[in-house]
Length: 240
Image (cartoon, rainbow, N blue to C red; front, side):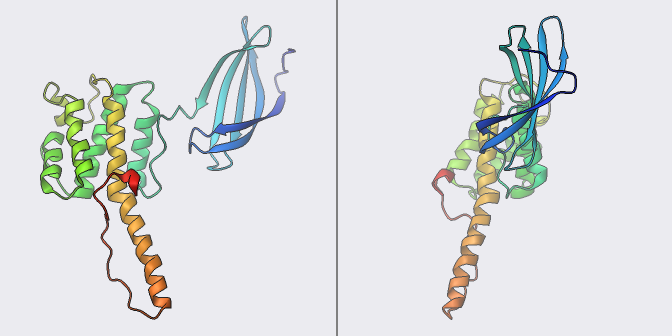
């Protein structure tokens, strides 16, 4: 394989790629640019824009002397372990969630610290509960009886999985980067998914259902509904 010149650019189609930003399967045409050659490899940058979300995707490739691909890594964005937060989630929450998601592969400690802080912020803002520690805030949410049983159980498991009893700093200084238990960072993201579904997604779905029904009632000349409960069921969010 002949080396590219310093300014060469080649377009190559890649089918069936999943965008690392929005995780939607798309057909993308990458532009391939030569970067440099060292004693071992020829380095290239492949870049494109996702046709679904419009964000840039950049790969770095190093090919050895016989032309076979030897090194391939996603330079931007960093790999996402989970889908992004739903669009109903406010940006101040979804951005921190995305950051915790992005750093999970590189540092579970950093991801867990972001997750704990985000969980505490969500409890304080959406539930209106503020205590001295995250442990106490979780307990207050559970005791309130206002969250469905599946979410209460998942919140309680945050303390168990994170071993709060042995590491109280996780509860008193939620943003502190400390050692994590196996699966702790992933579980925090799972619980945050549940919080987002219950406090943001389901209320918006209920509003839309009410608006659609009221439109039909109005068309039929019947009185509109005054209010639909924000969270319609106590089951697992995957059933909604």
